[in-house]
Image 1 (tube, rainbow, N blue to C red):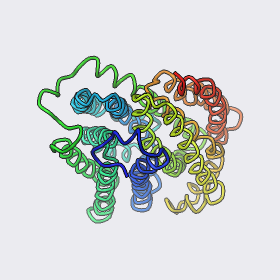
Image 2 (cartoon, rainbow, N blue to C red):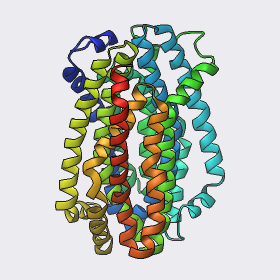
Image 3 (cartoon, one colour):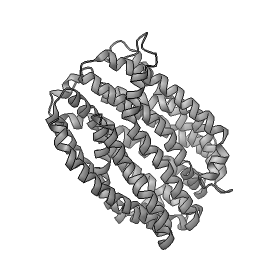
Image 4 (cartoon, rainbow, N blue to C red):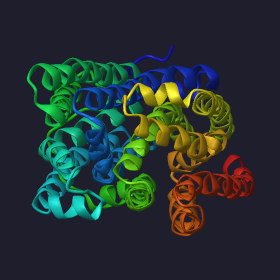
Length: 448
């Protein structure tokens, strides 16, 4: 087992052992967070009503956009820290940590102020109706008020993991998720705060997570920690962070755009309940995507460190093993979505119209999930070794070049089923192109 203060073991231990050692804490953390979101939506659906699920689904683009700025800093910084530690440049890694904290505070605060000022207008643009707007507004007002804690917590937790503390990063997430699970039913059912209570529980939990990661980086025994004089924004560090994190930023930003187009199309061809059905479908798919991302987070420090240390065969090994694991996860998701969609939808609501829409949508949209794991891992792999341009290309391929045109064209001929069908059409095409890209680039990575 790798020690919690010796990232050097990333270049000495067996790849299979390392991947599971780093992935399991990340998977537990990401899956737990995703499960919370599912349970939270069940609480909202059963305790507030079916239109509340639709209102919550309308906030996904804003949530993704907020997460995009967090990922721009967090994903870029954690990769940069791994590479600098692999190069044996610990002081540079500490500089990255200081810049990460400052950037998270600046970007998250600015985002919240701007969006809160225009919140109602933004929600109408996203497809809100007079029935769903109050739910979406109440939820986002609270979330945006606590956005700074979300950014600091997630950004520094990523660095904690990549600097040699994967278990502590997992425990931090589990504590935050546990707090969320306790507070959400208390605020919704006991205090009768409705959808605002769900948002308040999330903010409180992320505040707890923020305090834990800040305390970790203040402790003297932490391998990378806060030090006086390291809290000055450096242009080159910011440039490097943004360059590496741009793939995640663009992926989440374009994801927001996709969800906006999806919501508008769903509202046009299926109404408010179709938007709610997508919220249910997204809950299931996101759970398995987050498990794949957990494997990515386990792969990232191993690939980044060994690439920095010029151990290229180990880089190749960890990529291949991650692909296999992600594909197995995707297969489970595919079986559940195609075989048991009604049971899944019924957990969120008793409304038959909403359930029926979710069943049809789930079966169509999840057809391509078998290849999604490969697509997600490959984009993350290129990011992990600092190949930002290729990572960005792969990320944008599905969401901008393929999915948007499919969403604009197919519904005109197939109606609501065309909205659902645009997703697997884009996924299968993107996976094919991604395979061609990785096949042409792989030998350059292992023999640079």
